[in-house]
Each structure stands twice: as C-alpha cells, then as structure tokens.
Image 1: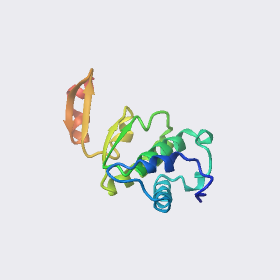
Image 2: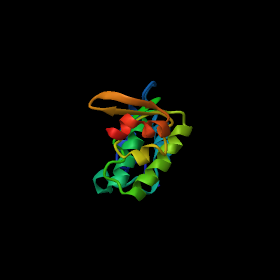
Image 3: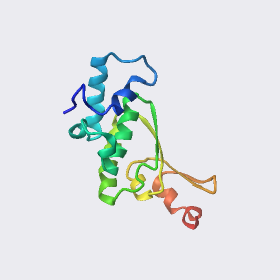
Image 4: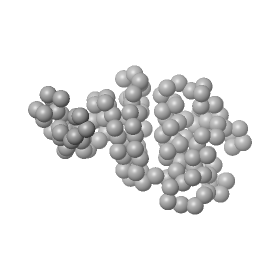
Length: 148
C-alpha cells in the first residue's frame, strides 16, 4: 500500500498541479494518488523508486502521473512502444477503464492492433497528411491506408 511519507514522489508531485483546479490539501492529494495508482495497477509498487520499475510499470507510472492532474483530455504518445503483446494487452485494459472516466483520449500509436482495441475513431496519417479518418475497421480497409 502507498506509504504517505516514503513513496516515490512522481504521482503526488503531478497531483499538486491539477488541471482546471486549485492545489489539493495533503489528505485529498493522498486519496487521489491512491485512486490513480489503483487504476493504473501500481498500488503494490507505490513505495518503489521509478528507476527500479520495468518498462510496463514505468509506462503505467507516466499514465498515473498524468491522471493525477485530473485531465479532461489525455494525449498518449506511443504508450505501447517496446511492450510485448502480453504487456500491451494489460495496458489496453487500463486504457479501456479510462474511457469509463469520460476522459477524452488522443492516442498516437504505430502498434495498430493495440490501438484498435480501444478507439472508436481512427485517423491515419502518411507523410504528415491525413489519408483516412473514421471507424477503425473502415480506415484499415481503405485502399490508400493499405498502400501506405
């Protein structure tokens, strides 16, 4: 469980700088940190230093730090990069939970099979220009996308 005085400061520091709101009192900040650590599957690792975590858990920590700011929109940039298929599947489960929190997600990802498990709209770009935009299945069948 999260130890209020000895945990890695990554999530509490981020939580102090909440989007669209004033700084939280220490008690409320601690509660919010526990919530996002639970959501991201990190409660059991809360007292470990960030540099001791493996890649999946470091990515989860980045996500937890972002969530601690209480965002309305969250940009995920290549969050699946470097993960095994099993690790990516775990991360997809967490990201699906974010949709239930009514946080808008903008997710940039090259690992398309991971991305399409979560999104309801897919924008495909090639050489800096949009070549397709719509439902993931339709975009993936688009001849221009297939050629790219």
